[in-house]
Image 1 (cartoon, rainbow, N blue to C red):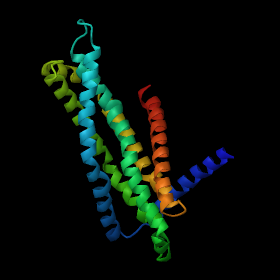
Image 2: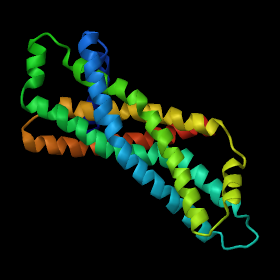
Image 3: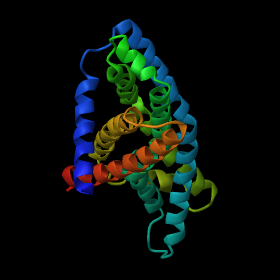
Length: 248
């Protein structure tokens, strides 16, 4: 019974995606909506992303340095490990799970509140495709999400460099040598491919839970929690599948 419910929800999600791209809203109105979503979802997220990325990069480099107890192991491995950890997993995946909490809850609660207050019904009565009006601007805004992840990568490595050099674990030259050591450009492409997929999930899954919720104000909070859980689960599953496809 539970399997049938899950399958029906998945089917409903894909039908929602089809509706999002039908009967588009006029560009004059859509442009304002897109700029508002960029401000709410991208610009407002930069602060917490920068803060977390910088300090987690520092923690990664310190923990790597503390585990290199053998004096025969070169110090440049601190920079190498920091680069690999930040670019391959921390920036695209860990930040996306954090954003599932921040962006996802905001999207679900804002659309859910519109559902509770019957604003979505009013849009439908006026002949507006409410899914296109509400969800499409979020998808377009989150096309800029890789820009956020790029900043996260840079600050993560910068935080690792500062923690390593000023903590006395390695010299600046050793750390930079580690960053350059055996660098594979495709790893950057792999990280941004994942980021585009995660951006789509971040825009659509919370929107789905907000749009189809039922009840009152209490249910808006419950829908936000459920959307965070399912967005995180799908990000982790997508991460596993994309890693298998792109890196093996």
